[in-house]
Length: 555
Image 1 (cartoon, rainbow, N blue to C red):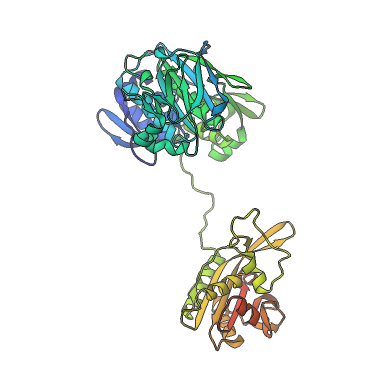
Image 2: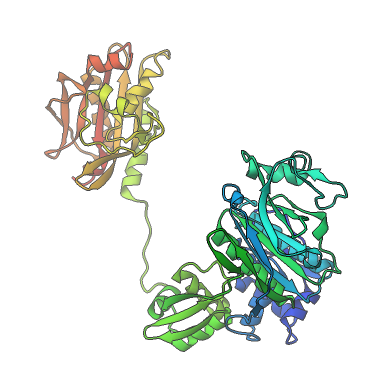
């Protein structure tokens, strides 16, 4: 298998090996026709192999063993949860408390009496790296070590050492310090950032103090795996125990399918002991009516159970639900809807046909969105420039500098910036701030903004669209800004505008008003108070208006 460099993982499936795993004399043509229906996209096809892309949430598809396992279910060769056997051993790992602050978890398994050729070794390494890149988050959450079991003296110790501690790393014949490995090797430079700030580094040693691994960086040369290796020791070190258990389950089922016998390993922490791998099935319930509702089918319970079995999930009926036994390696099944997808795959996606709706309808743009676009066109046509500001703003600008009461604000908890403290309940403060940062530009300045604003209503938050305009130059006044308001609303809504004198803390007394349409107030208009102009260090008068366009459309 060849690993490709792409956003989605791509693997190469050789027909001869895949056919030997699937069995039952299936043809290449049948397999190629089926691959897309188990969520594999064909990228390239030749007479010897096919390259397929799989979703990163299915790391069990990172080798042809996992893909063959799924195909055998679809073809009805093997159905239900795959068989898996695991026996105990006396192999153990002692975990030193010093790893707790560095990389606190380790789990493991032993795989014996198997045989790997060069191609299968490459597959195992590719699976290892795909898991590292995917659920391992580039080795930050987990890293996997694959070792030659026969050269290891048990029990093992998972501990930490100083950066100057030396051992012989993989592909080397000389002893090198861990610090040198991080500084001078490609793999050290690539993954060393994971250990940034650590005074000691994790290391796995055997009974004779021989080093197996320096996780998450590199294994030792001592435990190199070759085609002559018959017995394997797998370790996974981690910062996230669940992800480590997920990865180990995938390794376990893959090695089992490769004809290895899987044995458990005892992990001895300071306050608890565990035995891994844990391959216990996960139990999830699936509502029968939910399946048909989502798929648009009319399957009975037995049909659903058969479909799940073809997707390698054993299930049984329990009243109005289906109890599903999810194999431990199926880490993609997290919600009931994932089981519905498995029913669809087992049923055969190619058998699901599109149906026309019983009634037809014609789509159209939302009225409000059309009005907002038209507003931009009108105001731009009137010579104004649109600005766009953040919905989160500073409390000082939004309230204190604008003479506004801040009793009923929508504030961010534990904000890390005084410029992003509250949600805007008006666009005008941001427009005036924009003018204040452009005082060295030429006048007149005419700007507008169309955006959402937010208000608190008891325990609820209301949001609506607002249109705000600000005009700045030495001769601007109430009359000028009202002419822009009338032109805009006449064009947009074909309504006449009335204004009623009012008092507003932001606007000059006697030169401010409420905007009235059909006897309802939809906004404010007027000249900005002198002290606000001084607060923002503006040098010319400013006239403004702001309307609640969401409410205006309801009138």
